Image 1 (cartoon, one colour):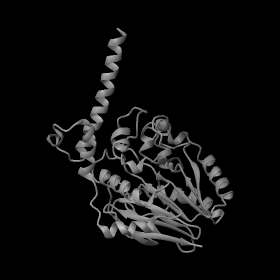
Image 2 (cartoon, rainbow, N blue to C red):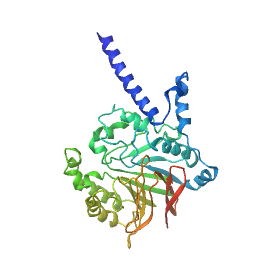
Image 3 (spheres, one colour):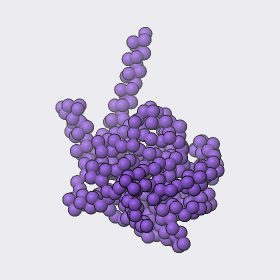
Image 4 (tube, rainbow, N blue to C red):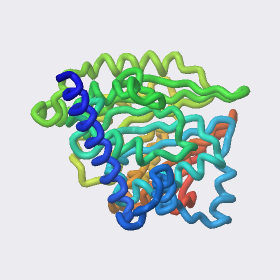
Length: 349
């Protein structure tokens, strides 16, 4: 009887993994007959070759300027089961990592569309993450936070995935990480922005965990973190924007402005607030405000954008961003799906 149970459990696991692999290969547009007769050990190489970026030499040469004393990746709004541009952009991130050698990847929410994950065994972990970001040079530490789509599912499972994956580093819903190299230091502050917005807190049937979080405690923690931050540079990341062109509810941004801006301005040490959620690139500067407000585009599927008040740059390209940090300069470079640097935010001391 025990042997039968074991076989049934193994069968279920194999079915889940097989389904995940089939979904991912399907998202890459790989025909089944293309791998008929190919040894199992080679099929992953075939899949990678099918989506590998063809990057021009002059574009690749530009990547050298992205390497600093500290180099960091930022991605968000990725989870499309490898469809659209998710897998090609993931491969591009891996190719570029071989050149710029990033310390880690910051993932600012919506790793899983559309209803988050149900558990640590949810197949979305394979189709949205493990089988997509599989390039050898992406076997780095990943520092994620929840987006609004994570809050549709099991946020505790999202946090606990480090028990399964050695590269998933999420110590809490909000946290901070300091990087030092030589005499250069940078602090990244990761925020949990969904509970800071009333429309999510009030919609407990869709976002059941949002109203359970203590927004005031998070803001108090942020205040203390910024008060004690003595690094050369401080960058704050969260999923939701403070300013942006978007057709999403204006109340989202008004709540962020009301709750978050006073703390970000209090100690005059935040260089950039970077977010996702809007699925395009935006760089906004406000008169009399030393903080640059940046929307990082989706790493899978982008949306149209137009200038708004304070827009320095905007683009409907999809892609990711790279932080290049030195003692006297902080740069955030927007990278499109072809590997081109389409805009750079530069802060100097």
